[in-house]
Image (cartoon, rainbow over all chains, first blue to last red):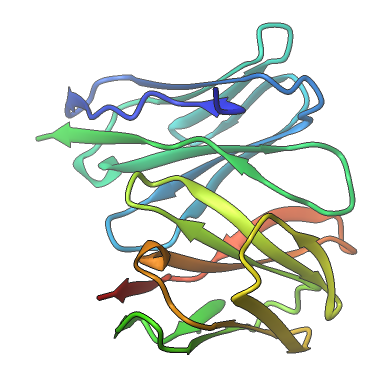
Length: 112
Length: 114
């Protein structure tokens, strides 16, 4: 079992839908949680960054962390075709090495 | 201006060859990383350098040797390439001393070993 699990999808939604992307993890020491977006043949691009539990909102994106359930989510409101990409969750423990553990990514397709 | 750049973008080579990939960041970050992304999209850390010192060295064959000539550059040399080395290799950087733990990625180098 991998430390961070993510449904690979693909997840196909119509334009304007609310999208929910999720990751579960097994290491309770993870403290920092990130969501990256990766377009085809490009590098991952940081979307959201959260420390410990709670919610964080940035425009159409909301990140949620539930440490008691070891579950994190990314919500995308009013999804656009330009949101079509692979979304990777990443997390790390609080150490100087800054080593990220990634999920395998969920491929999202937003259809016009 | 490209924040994290890598060369080459594509690399096709034969088994047994030795090749290098170069990475440069102009963000003033103190830490740089190499990741490998396999065909199933899993990104796995290989190495990390902080101020030119190796701080993370995951279970990677010793055919892979990173070198950091200065804080802005981190190169990856691969000896005796094997078919299983085919993947996309990403460089990333972050600023640990500045308290910014977010990692910024380069565009990737797609390595194909035939």
